[in-house]
Image 1 (cartoon, rainbow, N blue to C red):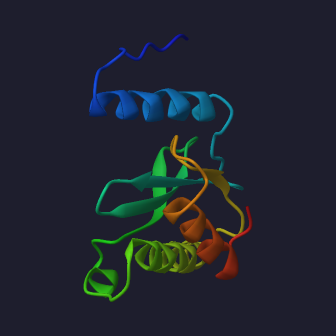
Image 2: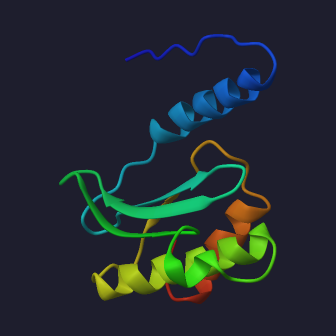
Length: 127
């Protein structure tokens, strides 16, 4: 199935580019019950990570910078992303998930995205 993303101007051009990359990534990546998909959503202020079983259509675990344990934390956005990665890995392991497929959501694997992934690996999730 072909997806079209409208060509935009200004700041909307960046959002359209992220959308195109995300569609391109999702063509190849899908979560199963054995290896669910770890989805990372990044905004200017917050990060959200979810572990999703695409076949069943269920979210198995999630964490965000909006969680009460992370919301008042000190540090920059990369430090908060590390906390989100550790928290989502802890919750995923509690749900019985050992290995995941990483979905960077069309963002570059650098900065906050890489910090979240590294923290999740250190907490015991396998990619």
